[in-house]
Length: 335
Ligand code: COA
Image 1 (tube, rainbow, N blue to C red):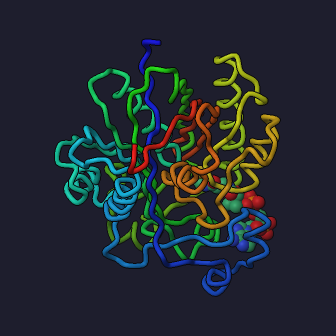
Image 2: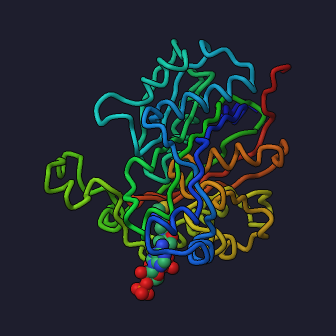
């Protein structure tokens, strides 16, 4: 088989040590553990409480984990695509800082912002680079320090989000294994329902925007909820149909972890058994671009070569999509 696919050959992850559980949130806003668990499935999330732990630092720790487990030489990495909505700073790509700190001296690097769909978009971007034949080792990371843009006085949002980073290595494969297909969609009407209103070129930060807390995430949860279920369900169905597959052909669904009720609804709409749908939202909450790679990191032992995996995500914008992959072999220090 001559076609080049990009296959995931290594996974790394990092979550901060500090745990913010529902009991702690009960003391910060008017909420209860019971409400949060029943309405979202989240029990706790990790927070980068050290102010010096930026998005770049979490990404470096995830990459170090990947390098440690796979034994690859950092100098062999050709490119780093970093999906994030919480860059270290607005100007100067965070991915470049990561390369500097992680010793990826031969890699070019850039950030990609597609909110909670960021990792999926970055995965297909990285895969396209590998498929050209020009790049042999591409790192794709998803990292967000959501605690830097969450208002811990707003119970509509602060219960949902956490911090973390996950990264995968993509390499070429010529035996039909790897990323097979992607379907991506966007709808700009979604901006009004989920965004950080201030701090960008549309509305620069000033005293007023800070007083009105417009530098924090604001959302209409109900609208996002409905669109997320519809968007992920439709994208998954479309990618299955385009590849002449049914839900029965899929071994695992790895969905964006925004709300357990969204995940359950998408699984039901697809007709996929619950035990095939990977969930870790109870431990990390919604880590935005990091949810998918952290799911791969947590459940990598379950995936066997040849397994068909359906990824799906939905995020601000709106952005959403689904990707189909055939799992390959992960590198170990020995191979
Ligand atoms: N604790 C207790 N009560 C809360 C609460 C909290 N943390 N947050 C909201 N409520 C209240 C509301 O004020 C409302 O009260 P009311 O009926 O008196 O008006 C009630 O609970 C129901 O609110 P609603 O917004 O309809 O709840 P919901 O079931 O839609 O759950 C979200 C709210 C935010 C959990 C849910 O909409 C969601 O997960 N949306 C998607 C968000 C998302 O994924 N964002 C990231 C993008 S990927």
